[in-house]
Length: 237
Image (cartoon, rainbow, N blue to C red; front, side, top):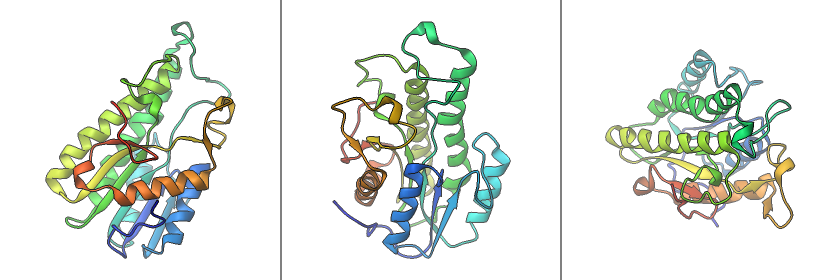
């Protein structure tokens, strides 16, 4: 397992969106420790500039800010929504509520799509650059054998399609760049803690981050548009 980002040209900047979350914080720390970048831009609701996934103007301002701190070589989208006090993953179609479904799609698909809209153009025309968004294995249609979690599954499947589609356009413009969806495994964060069942392999944020950094380091343009787990193995669509 690689412990750095040696395949990315040294210098330039890295950007983490959702940097205040459990996994986003760990990713930011690991990227900073890699020493590969001149600047790390950490974006969240509490950052300056602040971002709100459903406020496109805030993403545009953040992208403009990030564009002024060197060539952008890495963008990691660590945002995502599974549950809160109002909404829990649906066990049955009887639990489906339009407003809750719309919120899941807004935060897990539309928000990341707007991130791609504003941050993919920041990549330089040549040399490796990576956009990685955190998807989930439960977003795999082919790997769905248990059912349930309707909104989360469907919104992550939508995210995967958006990544695939954006990668096609990105390849035309910046052929050495990479655009991928990554499944980090089950990570011990507030997002997953209520649903971590006995016998399920759960990683600390630091361990999950080490795996993700290793996968990002190994990925090349031929893998752009793919969906990979924390081992680097392709996940079925």
